[in-house]
Length: 213
Image 1 (tube, rainbow, N blue to C red):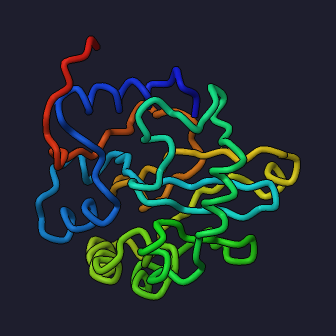
Image 2: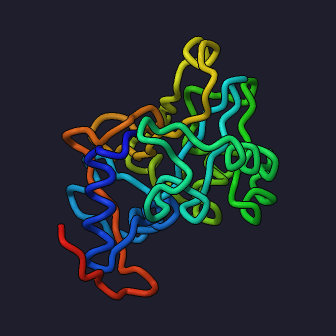
């Protein structure tokens, strides 16, 4: 993602109104308890978690708290989206392959051999990625999707061939596709597509910023 993207502009606007991105778990909970609108059900929803791609093919999935692209001012990210080496090394060092351990560190490590392009919704409670993203709601969300007739979810990641040519560490946004077709986790975008919406909530310190939009 670039610092001049619609993503940055959107995050700036959210902060102005005292809002922040929801987590994947909160989105799943809204589905499970029927609090979603038609647009949440059918359009891609941007969430706070994000994938950080490393040249050797590993991916570190970070929580919103650890997401450097949500940090005010992008202090550790260049205009091209490259991440500072020290921060990249720290995230890689603290990332855990076990989802429960990754909750505490805020970083989940996916090695190249851990990649899965298609996940079975009925097994969301067992897949490490969905356990990290949806936490205690993972199995219930998978069951809910299955009840809606969605048996599988696609995971769109940067191709390994592309990463093999890279020397930088960089991030992408994460959006979760609704039920208009097949459920998907889209982790390849540098910006926001036409049908992507921001999932938002009132920030804990909800004090609208008096900054010029």
